[in-house]
Length: 276
Image 1: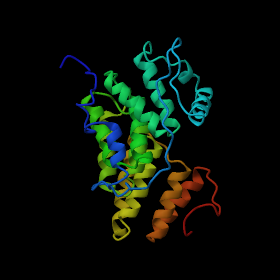
Image 2: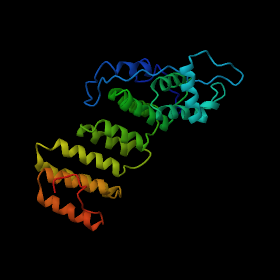
Image 3: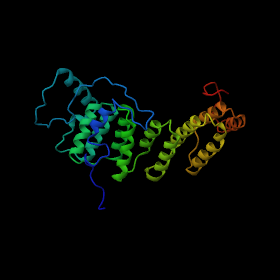
Image 4: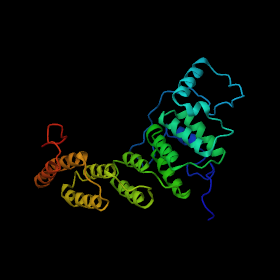
């Protein structure tokens, strides 16, 4: 009640540790995720994430590990100058983001575990990276969803990019996408953009293949929502709409959005991915 509390590993919905969650995801498929899989990844050499102090000798390691570490340090100067004893919470979060961009799972996990041990709070950007790693590197949709709940408990507002990852992760689940859209509107630091609505349209299209008569009403609801947020359709929006009505088939809807696309100045050519 007194403000934002620092996260502890024991408080996290990710069970005992994030590292264990990543390991388990390789041997099980979450019950509520159609996208999670047990795809194996090639082993990555273990490299200590915490750089040695300036007056401290580096730990012994193989020449291959040192070569890999030196290459990464050359690419990211922040890692070369990072000092665990003097680094600020902001710097810890920046390094976590850098490791996530490299999809370097072992080093990412080691750094995250050390942040948890030191009770260093994750920023919204760091959570964005963590959710991406759970969703698309470890392929664990359950853990990715747990991170979103953890952000709510820690009163951290998710970024729009966080919702982009979750929407892509649950693309085959229209009900989940609608729930995520509500969460986005309530908690995100930014309003929904055209990428969010394009993903929603694509998902609704797939869910209504057996009931094409529902499509016009659902699409109108999405377009009304877009106008309320002053989101302008882009070329991908029109491609998606044309594809939906061509597959239905719904000639009236197809002609409507074909004309709208022309009025907006978008070229109509053979690149349109639908059965025009």
